[in-house]
Image 1 (spheres, rainbow, N blue to C red):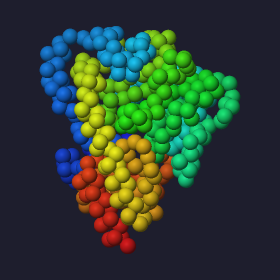
Image 2 (image 1 turned 45 degrees about the vertical axis):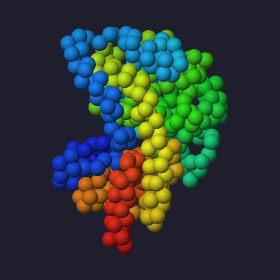
Image 3 (image 1 turned 135 degrees about the vertical axis):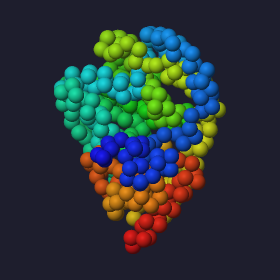
Image 4 (image 1 turned 120 degrees about the horizontal axis):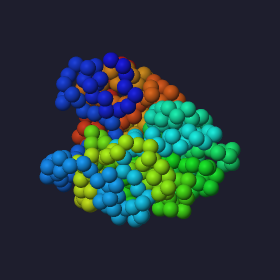
Length: 357
């Protein structure tokens, strides 16, 4: 079985571990460990009867709720079959630029999507030794017809750029696409979303997902926020009814569940700090500080070797970084989970390191 390019491939992990999927503890996919909110589960059950009808092709109610949530006109919102579908349309437009600048390491679907439309990519390395830098490592004066694809918070490092850092680049690039898949994990006083700037900048596209924060990767729901003329063009390109009825209802319920949002913020702040400190105490490891619900960890030993031993000896799944060519076998990424699970993970890593010493 081929090594996965994404986290969360539990079929692969279970095969290596020689155990059922239910026995695994998954640190490879950065999904909220609090699980699906009870309010969402209830609305999914109550909405099953709606499956006998087609969804509203305009998604008017969903767009209205998203618009209220983000304080923007519904015309600026397009729901999609996960942010992955919307990335496809953003990539189609980026491919029409002469170049698209992409900060690496980066989620490998960015390159795949742009390359699918024969777009040209200029890779810009992120210096991992200066992740505290506030600047973007892209040209201050890019050539005409240049695009920029940015992930904020950045995956896999967890680095967060401020609004003030990014805003000047909206004047310099012809098209700027920002994937904010993990922005929900930041409290309102810390988040750095540029959604409020979309009205002013027709060249700005924001991608959002409910996959991570609301533990809904299997439901496939995301949305783009961009100028209405751009979204109308995307609507012409795609199949009808991209978002299913259950995803619509789950999203509306999720946006209204303020208690779950606060519970997630309360859990993450303490759990991430605890996990970071526990990893620092294991000599071969060097975790990088990050703002999201995952940590990138540098290791003096083979990350794939550690991954295999965690699977076979402890039924724990971590994300290797082989799909990030700039990182390779000396880095791995960990989702932040519940405190007891984080402790179990670090104790397992410490035991493996001690046995190999």
